[in-house]
Amino acid sequence: MRIAIKMGGDLIKGESINTPLIEDIRALAQAHSVVVVHGGGDIVTDMAKRLGKEQTFVMSPEGFKSRYTDRETADIYAMVMAGAINTKIVGTLQSFGINTVGLSGFDGGLIRAERKKRLVVIDEKGRKLAKEGGYTGKITSVNSGMLELLLSKGYVPVISPLAMGTEYEPLNIDGDRTTANVAKAIKADLVIYLTDVEGVLKDGNVIPKIGALEVDTLLANIGPGMSTKIHAAVEAIKGGVGKAVITSGFAERPLSDAIEGKRGTVIAL
Image (cartoon, rainbow, N blue to C red):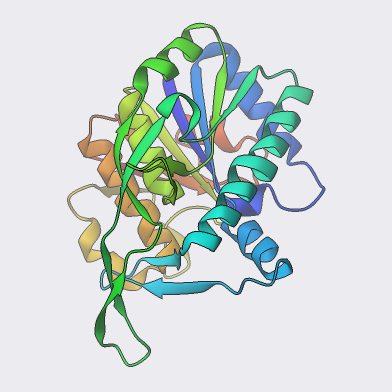
């Protein structure tokens, strides 16, 4: 089985180690091909503020909240995502005996993207405004050959959501969408989105399964963070991935339980 995993920033903040999650990754990697994509936007925001660079966030008409990325922010984003966070995760996984390779979109041209020329955002009064796109990217390709090579040698690639633009500039790309594109590139059987809640909630209860064609009816009552994950999961499924699971990363066996259908929300055709 081939599995793509997205780790949210809440799973890697602070000095404590999420031992059950890492042991679960180790067990899966011994039997399956595993690729990990990590987030960490809150860590980027904290570092930017420490460096005196206030961060601006915008909301799209579809309800997606994202960081507005000018060139200075792009450099901070690259430094934190591909440097501090990726290195920390790789080192932690290696300490548990997991043979990992840390990557960003620049390594081997792993993830290429085009700068968005403009963004359509919603202001405080609910009006649509056009804004210069900055250094936010739309993924155009994933170097599947490099991932195939690493997987064939038993490595677990750990990927930061940083793309290389057409002018070789760093571009901020969404981590959930990155995971979907990586999952499609390796023809994954399963993509798992780990978060800080048990799954997609409705009236406080976990929805056990959502059909990919019926998600639009749910999005009006779901927050922007979960909305992005659902859209990314649907993108992966429409791209040939078998199924997606959105689940908590703070359980005893978060990945194994998701695979066995014991936890989380399954999204499939």
